[in-house]
Length: 285
Picture 1 (cartoon, rainbow, N blue to C red):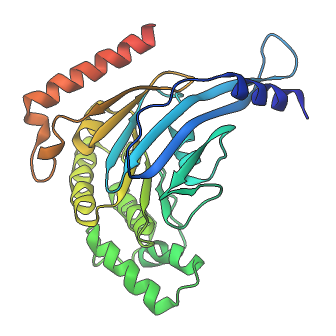
Picture 2 (picture 1 turned 45 degrees about the vertical axis):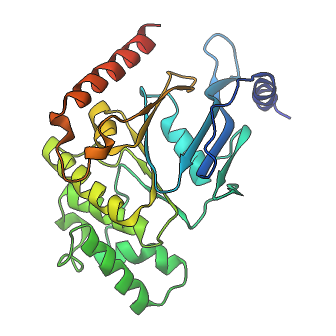
Picture 3 (picture 1 turned 30 degrees about the vertical axis):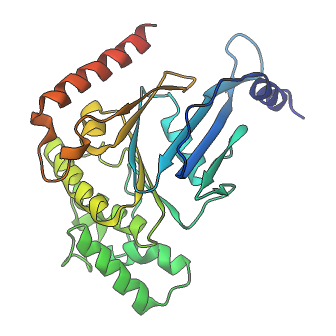
């Protein structure tokens, strides 16, 4: 076994931390997950094991909307990819609906920051693509895709191509594409980060309405404190690398999300300040 791989396994076996309190009925269960990557050692020849995730335990309830919040490089996207089955943890496990995640699943779908649309395909064809991979016949998959394009506000744009859409509209296609499989869990990796402020707020409001209608379990990665508060039932604050669960915060404004402007509430400003101070102390620790 290569030395770097041996070091990774040794570190994973030797590190322990008490798991966080579990939900009785979790749709998504992350249990004591560790992840290491190989990194070039600047002081020596060769590579070393760099710890990216450190004893992550997290339960997400059915229909819950949680956000992963933390500094760049703290492992948010790595954790999301482990949840999706795109990466394997070096130690620990992930379960979806009590089934172990060992590879990508059709009932766990991702929305990416960079849209990832196929430029030679129409909006309808892009949204229907997962169902095409599943072997669904053309008429049925296009009917389902058209339904979800309507849900995200793109009725009438089915025959357009990605280059004819704004960034916000392209991300709506990405959301529809993820929803056509009716996933148990939707994993979203900073999906609104590249958009301008007004478009981002509009998409946040529209996506909350969609989530409220479908009750899909959502794990949402963001760098933005206000976005986490606007969208989430709970906010999971990760420490700087290696990523650990620093704090799990119940949003004080979650009950006002649908159809209201939570940013205008005093609780929003107070909690945003507290989270900002928490992240600032993490950076200076």
